[in-house]
Image 1 (cartoon, rainbow, N blue to C red):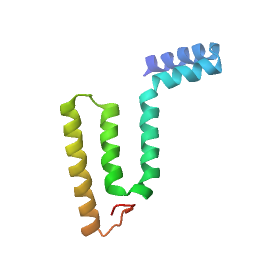
Image 2 (cartoon, one colour):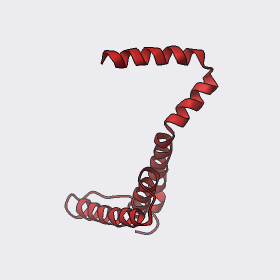
Image 3 (tube, one colour):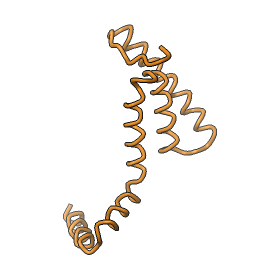
Length: 108
């Protein structure tokens, strides 16, 4: 714990020496995956009302798996199967058991 505090203090001292533009660039490079995932999430929320829950969620899970996970064909197939199974089962459970409505969008 104490060593982490020391590290944070030393990092903060180094950051004061950097210009704002350089600091923002370093933060973006370091957290690039986080920013891309957040953008993907906000796009998911925006598109859900137009496309619908099922299709948007399947696409969201696949794209997130591609961004975060390994990029082999086998993994893409597994991500697709998992996204379809999870999305459809969640939809059926919430619609038929809990009577919660999801955005239907254009197709459903």
